[in-house]
Length: 168
Image (cartoon, rainbow, N blue to C red):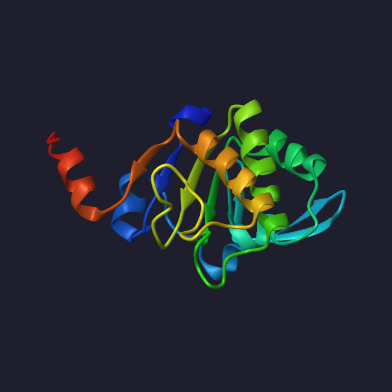
């Protein structure tokens, strides 16, 4: 069932967290290469119901809005894993974060359900790195935070257990 507002931000993305929402990591044999206007896109999995790709695969290349729109016509739900923390030493470039924002905007406009998996905390809301990012990155991160603010967050197995047992 599609719907951007039904999406989740899942941290750290344990098998238990994913399984509770019917998400199971694709096996290496499920890797696929999709033909896009900009070029071939290698993804972890692509079936009629869901696209599963990493942040690096979807945002680390020179993908355009047209590429994301084409994918949005095919997949009603997307899993994006390996989303780095903007404050990490290995954080992606401002261009990668801009592509992530473009991707989120396409998913929102097309009412596609996102499942966003980050090994570390995004922050609440998704905020700039400690000590302040470069100005161009701060603006993009702020807009990403606005877009993600409507998504539910699952931040631990304990939180998941509480929700499943009906606790607060």
